[in-house]
Image 1 (spheres, helix red, strand yellow):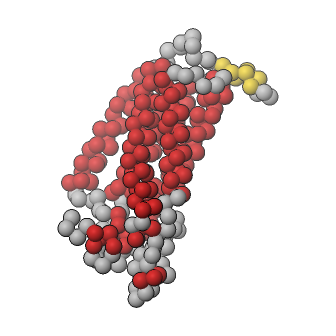
Image 2: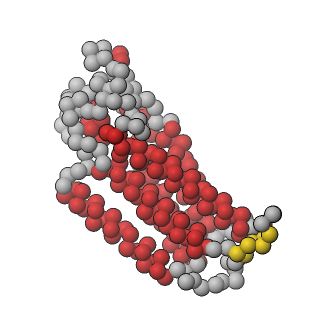
Image 3: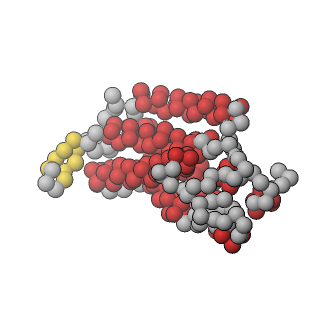
Length: 237
């Protein structure tokens, strides 16, 4: 399945467990699934899963239990799960290999994990929701509409500017980690799959763009009316 290299440990001695074999192919498979399938899928879902904008948008509270928010919940909790599994995979790799090696693969891998953790933290700090027709808001009382997302506060703008842009950089770093890892520990079949995966996503994205399924997030959530702050700001767009 793979070539053996002297600089790659094949077994580790651990407390209680004693000497155990190291199966790097499991680590490789886990990381490929997480970073080249799971994470891009979560990004694809929030990009193309948003509902078509209506007059009043989504009125129920953002919740895992409300099906109209499935696209957001899948993105949020799916990425949480991906980061947790990736951290576990890195910790296991560090333990059995005796620490940080300083290789290109390890540098890309640690950069990916660190930036992914920052993404999670930023997601938690994205601010409040708000909205004219949202949850307990009174459509006749503007004071009840306020929220970082609805009002487009600087906090929300900064969150989106960083979160959306840095997310693609995390994928770039993860791709570097996967590529350098497979160069360090060759797995020909997995390598072929890795090459094919981006083209599968590309084909799907092209179809979604052709069908014009990439709806504006603000309008999908708050409604398409021109009275909403961000719609009014972009009235000529």
